[in-house]
Image (cartoon, rainbow, N blue to C red; front, side, top):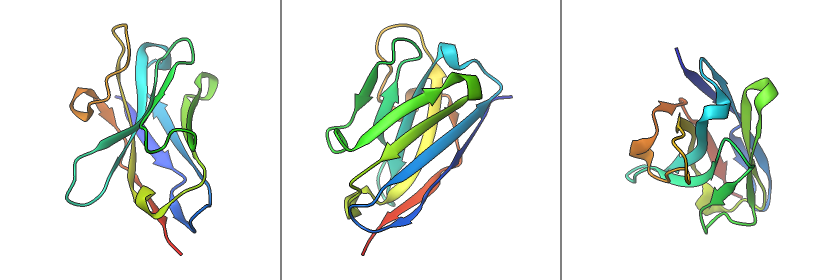
Length: 126
């Protein structure tokens, strides 16, 4: 059974940093796209960053480019989202997600992702 568990959320002041972690079990990281989404109340899930299982290729939403970094540690079955220069508009529930990679780029659409974590809240305020 595939299971994803996020951790690392919390409250931080504008300009601060957080690192989210996603621990996965029950599947092979090397064959799955990995992504971080976020969602605020009343809106759909927005892809923040996604990563191919090979080649260390990453994609970012324009709103977080240069501030957020997605990374993985296959040996530990973990992937991460380092978030720097956080702003109030980054406040959201953050989810890690994965789906089987079939080549090409990893989809940015939430409906295409098969596996989801339970979410971790990130709040940025002064």
